[in-house]
Amino acid sequence: PPLSSLINLDDFERAFAKSGAQKANAYISGASNDLLTYNANKTFWQKLWFRPRIMRNVSTLNTKMTMFGCDVVMPVWICPMGIAKTAGPEGETALGAGAAASGIVHCMSTTASFGVEDILASAPPTYPFFFQLYVDKQRHKTEAVLQKLEKMDQIKALFITVDLAVVSKREADERIRTQESTSVYMSGEKNKVDKKGGGLARTTGSFIDWALSWEDLAWVRKHSSLAIVVKGIQSAADAKLALQMGCQGIVVSNHGGRALDSAPATILVLLELRRDCPEVFEKMEVHVDGGIRRGSDILKAVCLGARGVGVGRPFQCSVAYDREGVESAAAILQDELETAMRLCGVTDLEKVRGDLSYLNTSELE
Ligand code: FNR
Image (cartoon, rainbow, N blue to C red; front, side, top):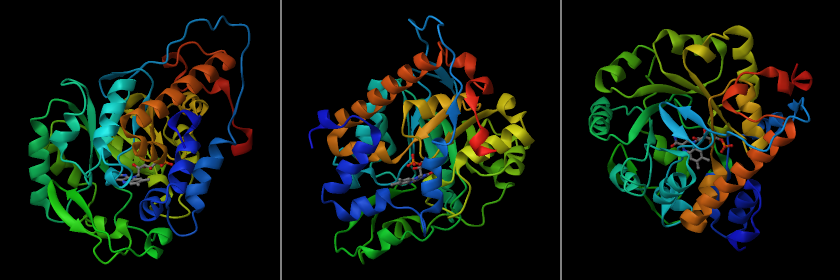
């Protein structure tokens, strides 16, 4: 379908599912086992209601936020997602260019299909990016990546993904057999993967170090001066540990339901953090991803205390329409966010961060 006919983020995923790129769609849309966490991520945002205020002069709005020192037009980052070329030839360069044109940030993946330099070059020379790190079993490879990043001023934060010690079972991905091979950069090296046509995720993820532990953050710190953000926090206990270890931020995430199935919907974890360790919201940046599809979801996440949200699959699917697709998906989110704010009586997003008075959480209690 033409880009102009896609009017919400789900439309991008549906259009991609119908495009005939079966293997790519199984990889992108898929999740673990019975999709329990994948489904919960989405439906739990829908169980959170607003408590709107009226007649507040909503003629002018501020949707801006600062995330790890970067000024953004709205508090959204494009999730790190492996091998974006599976969705379209521009791959991560479409995500980088589209994010820059829209005033949001792209967090590039360790398993991107373009090299870091090419992705950075897709945006204006000083435009910020985040980098997602999987620690390699061969630690010297990760050290080399960190060393390289030190020289790249455009990269403002290091998101270390910790919720995928092993790649999970993605059955849709495993069922589709194909002879096509996909090239992927892993820790900066180009490899041919998936020759046998097995699960794309499992073949690309086998280098991830399952021996990673909290002590290793000190080793990362030794090799990097970037803001350290732990992506994949799923409990208050671990949020507290991240704070103790001196991290600059966390991402409450279950990998979009692609890691442990039956992990809690991310919104439940945010509520747990508010209850058991409210201090983390003030002492570091708390971000969230998983199932965020509407501008109203962004407003809900911010009211719960998030400084930013990640949006994954719809942006990956938007790459099928090149950078225009990415820009269009971002513009839809921006428009929906502004509408939700106006109808909720919120004029300044920054001021309502952590303000539960706009939310009715009774269905989640
Ligand atoms: C991912 N995700 C992911 N996360 C990460 O830290 N490194 C990665 O390389 C990938 N790769 C990846 C590929 C694809 C195709 C998807 C869909 C997801 C997880 C991603 O960053 C994010 O946590 C979820 O996608 C968020 O959920 P939604 O928005 O897709 O529901």
